[in-house]
Amino acid sequence: MARKTPEINSSSQADIAFLLLCFFLMTTSMDVDYGITRRLPPPVEQNDEDVKVKERNVMNVMVNKSDKLLVNGRPSDISLLKDEAKRFMTPRPNDETAPEVETKHFDMLGDVLMSKGVISLQNDRGTSYAMYISVQNELARAFNELKEEMAKQKFGKTLDQLTDDQTKAINEAVPVRVSEAEPVVYGAN
Amino acid sequence: MGKFRKEGKKEVPQVSTSSLPDIVYMLIFFFMITTSMRDVELKVKTSMPKATEIQKLERKALVSSIYIGPPRDAKLGTESRIQLDDAFARPADIADWIQKERDSRSEADRPLLTTALKVHKDTRMGVVTDVKQELRKVGAFRINYTTLKGSALEN
Image 1 (spheres, chains in turn purple, blue):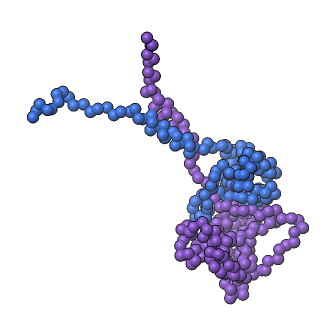
Image 2: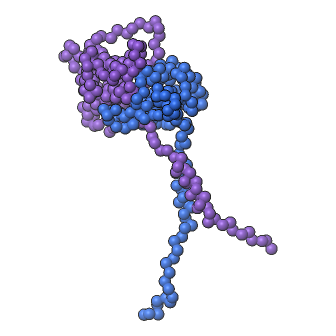
Image 3: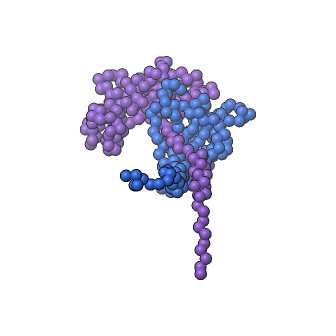
């Protein structure tokens, strides 16, 4: 007669499972990282000719080592930067001092008036990172508001309601033209 | 009528706990899948600035982080230092490190590799600029300034 094997007591299974659960509860970190995504330009060749850009097409933003802003040679403030950048990038065909405009055709948007303006950002080696991020953020905000306006005008929707194709078209029609100047050493650190 | 009533005390039956392990196992699996162990021990402080125009960093497996900030160990001073993986590094080490990060990814993923810069807000831009110049030299163009959510005007 075969002997009956005694059943394994499974009452401690719950304890073991709880132990594991505690371990994973402690080690888990569900923080999702957020940030400003940028694309660095490829390194410049030494003998590359300087690309001539007309002065009216450039908005110069400089941040010095004590985090003070200079926009086109005039002192400015971070709270004004977004509106200044937005005003600069809004196409104004009849304004001689504003950046040049060109008309481009997009399949989804039709003819769109595009500004040729470029925002040039230059910072000192002594600028604080917090200030740099603030400036980057304010410039990004200006472009995002322009995109939002175009989405409203062309599709009657807000940006996050658009389909992927429509978002792509808007991104092409309002390119983020922020160029970071090559670093120069002025001596301050 | 009384004869239908059962005799003796009425006892509340015990709650069966036999399904407890199943519930706990379910939770375990959830946490096992979502867990991501912190892979580096931070040697620098990274209290990041705030920003509003931010995007979520998709696919964490394709992100390698560079930490920049003042050392946690007060003996090392307050000047911001660069941390790659588990050790302090100089800007010149970044090229090799990027190469190592690329080699550890599959061929198809390499162009999508993003470098997340986790920088303390009081850091001077000099260090960050040096890092960015090194990244440009090795062709790691996709970068992300990791920030917290909040108004940038409060920084």
